[in-house]
Length: 237
Image (tube, rainbow, N blue to C red; front, side):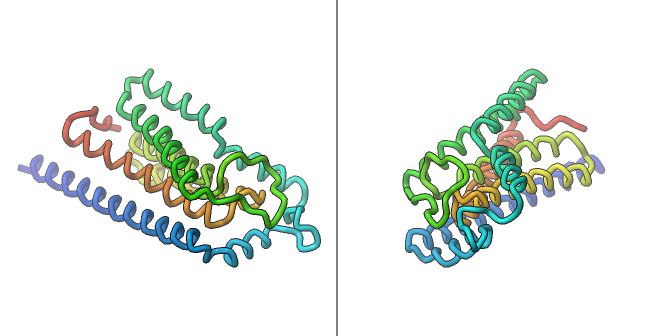
């Protein structure tokens, strides 16, 4: 009887977490929609301009605030959200997961990141927002501005990895630690894009929203498939 009660309690806990996650997804998509609407109506210039200029030397708008080493550090940080770095990270993580037999987790990573790239690319083409022209960018750019690919893909990749790592331990402290690291990395990448003058703040905010929402959608899908027995259940710690 106690075993049955524990199983019921565990099931209810999972359902509660799924409900909270679905609500979080809905909230993120709502915020993204509101930002996108404002961008289409061109009602964000003052907000974007003020924040971009806050990162610039008033005497020379081509010069970001702070010493030269901070600008170099920003370039290093922004690379953490680049296709090259995230592609290498994806290959390393997915290869490792396949080698240890965690095919379900490996496919989640692939679907999350590759699907996120496709989704973000379609959104960029759909909105086709020009890059900021208030200041001279300090990094090379090749694609439209909205939403930020670096912000979206870093959110997808780092949050998904953190979620996978969180399933390897029963320690709430360790789960919180890895998730906080993922959030901090994602935040730093997004801020670096505005600091370098290659994105509007609303681009980054929208990228964070759509990236986090997509990562959560993939995670909910995997959890449901595990409950239905279509993929491997999470391994016990």
